[in-house]
Length: 356
Image (cartoon, rainbow, N blue to C red):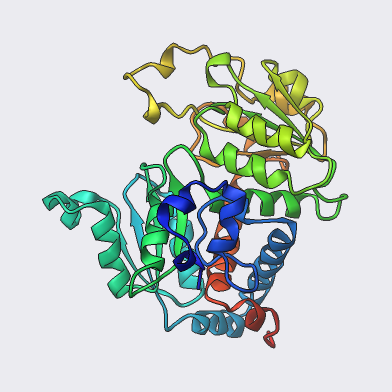
């Protein structure tokens, strides 16, 4: 159970994200509520990735898969996705199914009492009456954090997993991205010392914000941010890198950065956040796409990543190249989210030590 009962809401919101971490964690350090990337240090990342690997291995046999389905068969999870999603929704759903969790879902406010005027806060309190976990994705920044505090201070506290909140955080996407990098380089020196290129809509891409932070937990990782001036990485991200002494560069030259990259993280233009319709279409993005020429420049052991969905920022001719990791990222998401859910309920040790 999180310690959010020990602090008032106004005091909690005044804290930095790092300072909020102890109030959201269980005694063993694992999050009770997963709200932002700053909750994870290197040791937690390694524990979760080891658990994800263990779940993958156990699931290879029928007996192991049946064991996993028994682990959390007594739990129920609500998938409350008030923002459109397919991959993130299905990934969390599949992770729950791996562990035997019974799920419910609301993916359109028009099918819930919000259509009648009920607030999102009241809807979530209602879900907590029936379910043991709420996995939520919302366009409203800060809603997951507010409800984590509210539920912890209610008669029915249940954990919240943030599956994307506004333009600020997407912690479970960052976990699967780190897991993909760790698996990609596990037999080639690891993630430490790598150069990671972020390209695309870095201003509004919450996946970039979350992953950039998690990469600061690794030693000597250099981050290169490549985007049109209008979509460059925001100051709140670079301020964290400055404070942590992380080397980074801001650039408009994708090919020059790809030549130095160990990993290239492409993102789409997030035009759903446009202040006026069609604003993003006026930005010249033709130099910020990855195709055959960029593929020829990338190191033989390099990797290409994308949180998806994509548009034309990665040419389909790249899809069959063994360095293209974006489809593996999707499957990795199921495993790492299963690990996070199992850990949230306190089943990390039992899974790691089972006989399968």
